[in-house]
Amino acid sequence: MTNALRLACVGAGYFSQFHLGSWARIKDVEVVGVADTQISAAQATGCPAYSDTGEMIQRTSPDILDIILPPAAQAATINTALEAGVKTIICQKPFCTSLEQAKEAAARAAHAQARLIVHENFRFMPWYRAIKAEIARGGIGDVHQAVFRLRPGDGQGPDAYLDRQPYFQKMPAFLVHETAVHWIDTFRFLFGDPVSVYADLRRLNPVIAGEDAGYIIFEHKGGIRSVFDGNRHLDHASDNLRRTMGEALIEGTGGTLSLFGDGRVEKRVFGSAETTLLLPPDRWDGFGGDCVHALQTHVVAGLRGSGMFENEAEEYCKVIRIRDAIYRSAQEGAKVLVT
Image 1 (cartoon, rainbow, N blue to C red):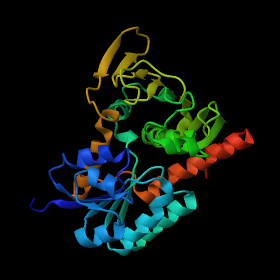
Image 2 (image 1 turned 120 degrees about the horizontal axis):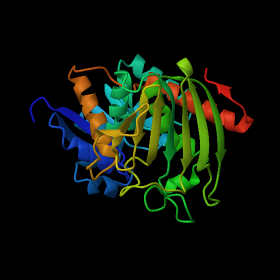
Image 3 (image 1 turned 180 degrees about the horizontal axis):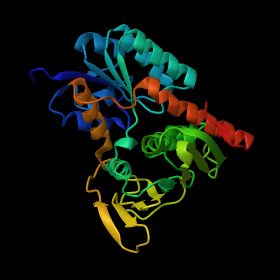
């Protein structure tokens, strides 16, 4: 594969299937290795398998390292890659274990003149791209407010999350840290950075360690308000509850945009009862409207000189700062300014 970018992955857990499935479809990329501490998991991918990340990097000399690991393992892996001279690193979210650790990782990458990109893929879902485009062209006038209702229906009972990502049960900070963080970034993408947050969080399932339901109100510059209304116990109308994971409503002076569980986006003009279809239902069988592929294609295009990169680590630290403000608001029972 002439002039292909050499790509290696670290982590062969549940979500790696979506990363590897996407990389296999990008003609400018050659997967040269997968590392996992459980060598059998790496071997199961069908790619050259390694049990040690450093050895894999030394043997394969990747142009890109894709880190598909939980937060506790990310910083050390990033350091290993930087010390080995890797110049482009993609790292899964949640990104690192704290704001301080994330800022340090971003600083180390900058010092090494390496690019560190957070794999935050929800903003790349086709419905959010369509909503962003409609807002940008003034299709619903001045946006006043928005709400997303998270309803994946996977949080009930003693076996919640065990079939897919069992470590969810042990996370002391769950709904916001693992899930709502997607919409922190998506709301930033759609409406700009929030200036304040207010959160009311709760735990409904006693078998898990962290919160699994709650409300978060974001105040954005210009007076826009967005609401994340999350409850992992409840569902929504969809043939695939993990496609959109819920429903959204974005309201402006000129109309309203509605996101449904099948991925379609409809627009209703202010004063009218009629709706028009902006985006048809999603037909992708995999995860989230093929957003993983959209993100990874975006990174490759950027490396080839086409366009700017979204979600570089230094910028993504804003998401972590907002997340921390949300938890502080829930603890204090008060609106908290995002600084």
